[in-house]
Figure 1 (cartoon, rainbow, N blue to C red):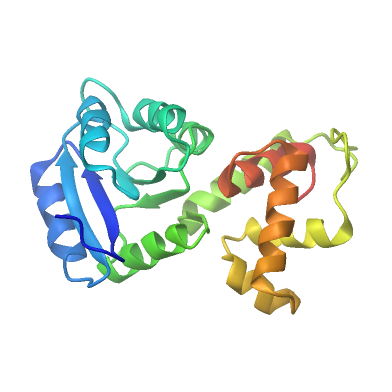
Figure 2: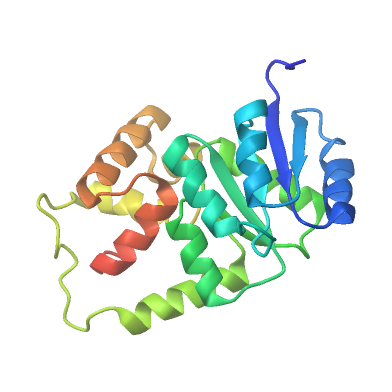
Length: 220
């Protein structure tokens, strides 16, 4: 039975012990409901169609279909699904492919239960979250690949305003709309409008993709 006002979570991992451990941890939170488990990417697609979760915790390396491909297919079917990759691997290739597939978070499995709960709530509140050690690799790689003389407005049909650029920079740090509003002394609803404009202008479907796209354009 669906419980109102709870975040519905699907756990996807090929290790049963890991799935059971995550379930035990997350069921301690009053605002979470574990609606199902899956042992590989294909099972995840089937489970999403059955249980309609709000958030999917997705492992990377799994049999039949890995987490990147499952994430990509989930976002094709339902762009509103929020996927957090939870893995032991911080390899740059996995990070880039996972985020490009549409994941809103990339976390390593050595985090605590409290940290995982906060990450889920951050994503549900419109934010994005990347493990700090992973984020450093992402930023370093984008800095290496970025053209040396690229203009901060290059590649945009309609340039960002100074305020939109301010908001984008804070979005890239993983802040929620409420936190950005407090930082810039503007209303949360105003922040939401700025974020919508930014996504449209830079051609991104969500906040994580916006950060990646902004790096490619030299905006950050």
